[in-house]
Length: 148
Image 1: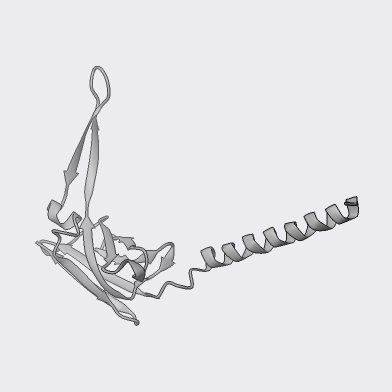
Image 2: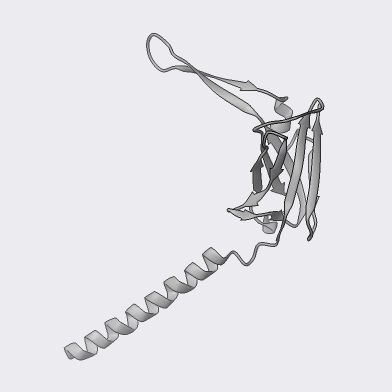
């Protein structure tokens, strides 16, 4: 086999690899399979806005897409994002809300002891016990969660 034929074969393989990588990039980065709709909301605890709490929408069906998340602001308001795109998957979701702080307590010897301080009942941070649900429609969505 001549060196020209070898070079041509490597060039064809290189082009094939380039197009394969390009197609994988388009499929992985475009995320066209996600059916997202905008979701904004408000979280209160005992009647007051819940500040700096994490909000997580977990789709009931895995094929709907990945979970959406957001963080409440000073007024208890949040906006959801899914893989850095605004919105949540259209459909039914279980909802988790949590607000906690981890405190490190230094010890004379060895590793520090860590304690978690919860600002709302722990049940809201577990999808099986929170009792919170939401349905996201193919429209602008406004939700409100009043925690006790």
